[in-house]
Length: 379
Image: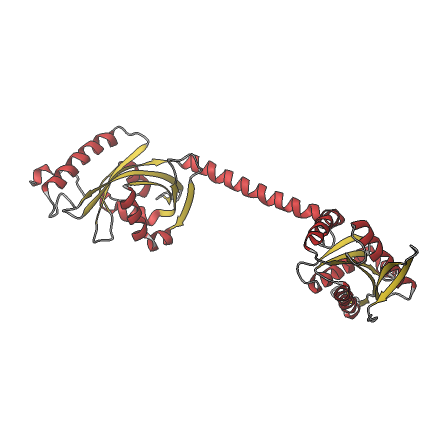
């Protein structure tokens, strides 16, 4: 192709390069069409990009004036400036199906690392559909939607991308705002759910959760032949802590006691703030002796811990704990809680600071006989 056939202001590589006449004629026609379109000054920014299959650099055979204005560069430097301006690239899949498109977001460094993979994907599909978030020369952020068709000239080992960029900043900023709102709503909803089932003071589960979770545990254990135990725990003489140090420090002590419980309980066991200075411990999979041992471990930890040290106080706490076991002692929620509570009060009557369990045996004549099991009592 003679030099005079090269369009004025040409800054590409193909028309001046050692390429076939059909490729050069095609590029010349495309540039002429794209120049005419660019003069219309529509919202679309036309471009012709090209690359050699053995090279890694993409250059522009033509690019619209609006992109040059955004990038603040010469036409010959547009491809490099555009690459460096990219903050994110959003790729959407399944655009031609009723399903919601899948969005993949790549940062600038990821684009560099995966450029060969991304170029191969465009070769395979023959189209490009992406959205770029860029930082323009004026420092502002813009969003550009990129849509292009790929053409291959195998004899020249050249790929041509005929496309246009459309500024969609308002739309994408609205989408980002919507995503932020949705994320905040999800976090708020999750926080509300957490607050609905947790005690505000101690962070343990509350009774609302207990009376929902226990029936499900009973049903599951009954179906599988499993066991579990409940521990009803009361802080001994807690009124003295309140009278001596006040309600504020007493509340802080309850928080620290709850922390002791959470540290001692192995998952999936959990603690419940039952009210005031009373707690319920739920021990899935624990039989009677295992539950008594766990209750004793907790009693010792509480007894050995010095509370309110950060407040400059040294408060010692004792506790009384009662244990009931499903299905050995009872098979309903109310009976299990009642037996554990009764066992805890039995400890109180016998001097506090101990662990025990109460079971009932029915004699042949139908009488119920109470049977007390303390931690150190081995049948």
